[in-house]
Length: 119
Image (tube, rainbow, N blue to C red; front, side, top):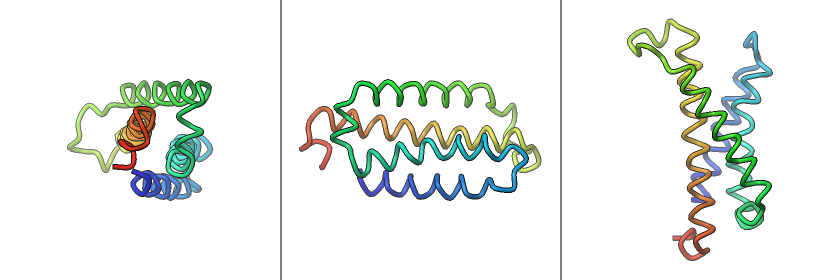
């Protein structure tokens, strides 16, 4: 799980860097950067993250916001996804939501016991 979370961290960091020339770059850098930080934290510090109720609450809030954004930006049709900026943004939010769900799954498995999380 550590390597997959590290990969997600690196991938979302690259997504955040690619937003530098977007008109609303700050928003999208944060949208991709925050889940990248969560994935990095759970990859390298899962014990401290899984024990902190504040961190778990913050992760839950990030996950709820990502899910709400995904529902809000859900594309009406995927056929013209390359031509519509809103559809591409919706797909980006889907990726962010899946990444945060994987982070939450990793923490949940780690809270069940270190032997389960390392398997």
